Amino acid sequence: MYLDLETLPAPEDKHAVLKYLHAKRQAKKAKKENGEPVDFEHFLLGTSFDGSFGRILVCAYAIDDNPVEALCEVEDESKLLADFWAKASDVDLFVGHNIIDFDMRFIYQRSMVHGVKPTRNLTFARYRDNPMYDTMREWSHWAGGSIGLEHIALAMGFPTPKDGIDGSQVYDFFKRGKIDEIVKYCMRDVETTRSIYKRMTFT
Image (tube, rainbow, N blue to C red; front, top):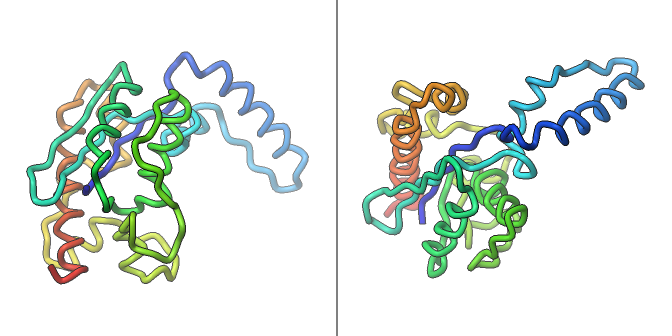
């Protein structure tokens, strides 16, 4: 299964607890000599990368050589997670870009938050390419650093999947109601990931 997520910051019903956590963090920073304060809005935006409070808007995926599909739930993330795990129940390899440190970690964390039991118990052990093949890590052979999907795609001669939108714009597109454009963008990332994987494995 090739997959990619698009995530959003925490919804409004979590803002009260996040303001509490933000205040505690600010108090700790104030005690440090060079502690830089972070306003709540920036703190909130950062939750889109945190499976504790951020949420999944879209999970695009493709199984083997089948067409790319997408799960998208604006109001019911738990349904998206249940649908994902149903699709993933017979998958023996998950392929994605930064999948170990982000996508699958985020999926597992959100599943625990919602009480949605995964159908697969995957290891997150590093320095291996199964049951998760991380194209970002395999590109650098685990030497560290963060290489974007677009960077590798262009190096291999594939078109950029970031045409008209990139990850930094997802929340703005969401606020403007451009859900379909986010879904299509996520699906392009999956198609690009599949192409990169096949080139990297010479298949």
